[in-house]
Length: 353
Ligand code: TXA
Ligand code: MG
Image (cartoon, rainbow, N blue to C red; front, side, top):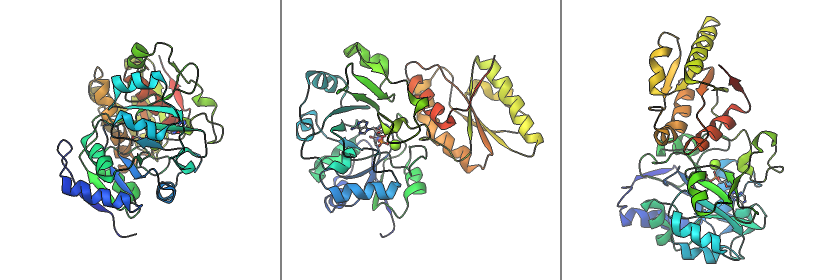
């Protein structure tokens, strides 16, 4: 494969000529990475099995982990799925375009590789002008997982994509940092009651306002193989930075005190800890010999979500020996953040206070 071409594109008003160049690559069966409102995706023609297989190869992703099909209008659901239940139309009307992925019975047009051989397909309409223009210009739905190497944090900038996939993707459309920063909420509508398989950019509370019966899978900790997971994205080791991550849970003051002690203890042993904390905690970590990465003010969990993956990558880039992260309340936007931190920690949770 030739070198990866990074093309800057205005995220609000994408230049049609640049989009057309990327659309031609999609139609040729090759790969294009693009921003969405959640994270960057690694896209291929969802109707072309060989193109879809290139995604798995580029990411080094197990073939058992199915992809999300991206569409540019709710009506396109009918080409992808076998039947559209009433709940799907209602959710699409309320939340599309947006960070909600619906799992539905698979239609015949979608090759088996997209769905990892299963009977269901995941679909979403992204709230971002670049993928919408790309899907329309290509004239096909686009299958796209997050554009990271398997088990690395999802990319929220074009540079993250390049860091993971240089030479493995033809074009990266660089539309700047992605606004939401965590992946879409995956809702299985084939389950009864409808079940959130992955909390994400759309809160559980917002979903329940439309579908009060929605429940959420809580079995993350028991799953350790791709085959065993209801959604393979529930794999614990899925958002991992390179350094081991320890998740500190408890009252904020107790957490900062514990982080400080642990950073100093590691420093005494010649190690350097990275701490992932809120702005308010920074002063209390002063002099603790830690690399500090900030999530923003504690009260702004949307901002924390937007910064999370970049912060994990940044701490890795600074070569820390361990990342000590403070947990958040698992409600609203905090549920997805808590989920990603918990997975990154692979069970290494420290209860304090
Ligand atoms: O925000 C997002 O969802 C981003 C952007 C690019 O759209 N995409 C993304 O894709 O995060 P990926 O492949 O990294 O995560 C898709 C998740 C995985 O947890 C996968 O297991 C699950 O959706 N999934 C896909 N198809 C499924 C299916 N048919 N049944 C159950 N889970 C499915
Ligand atoms: Mg992913």
